[in-house]
Image 1 (cartoon, rainbow, N blue to C red):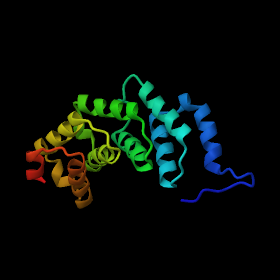
Image 2 (cartoon, helix red, strand yellow; image 1 turned 180 degrees about the vertical axis):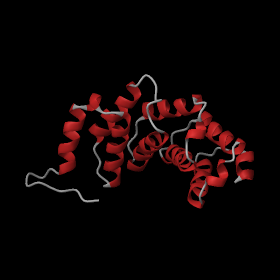
Image 3 (cartoon, rainbow, N blue to C red; image 1 turned 135 degrees about the vertical axis):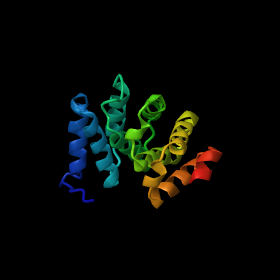
Image 4 (cartoon, rainbow, N blue to C red; image 1 turned 90 degrees about the vertical axis):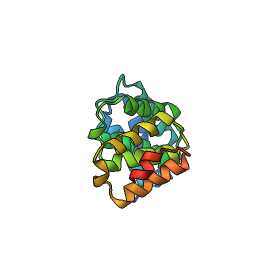
Amino acid sequence: RFVPEFKNGSDLFDHIARRSVAQTKDFKPQGISNIVWAYTTVNKSHAVLFEAMGDQVVAFEHLEDFYPQALSNEVLAYATAGTPHPELFEKVADHIVESKRLDRFDPQHLSNIVWAYATANVPHPKLFEKVANHIVASDSLARFNSQAISNTVWAYATAQVSHAKLFQKL
């Protein structure tokens, strides 16, 4: 949580962002997730970097190379930073909706994803329905900790998405 500053008024994260934007196409999925999460963690805003990294994710033909945690951290970083990127959110949501393997997602990932969409005020009813149906149909609720449960409930309430079976199960 420390951002070293230079005598010219810039800081280390400004330099990293400039170099990273120039090399966006060289970033692997995990690297993209890590860099936007790092900027969010130190509360460092850099719109050009976030736009470039988001555009890179959108440019991927598919998102199968992203681990569930990387997808979760990606949208969580944008939501936490308050940085909009509608195409990124649409691409990630569509990928999850089309996924036949939500069992790869830990409860924390699912909780963070719906929390990110609610926080960013990005409506995607099919995403919320898919996640809710997965939770209801699986035994994954036993692996949810209290924070994941409360974040999930908060996300559905904030997004004004009703899912009676999900709330009953929770």
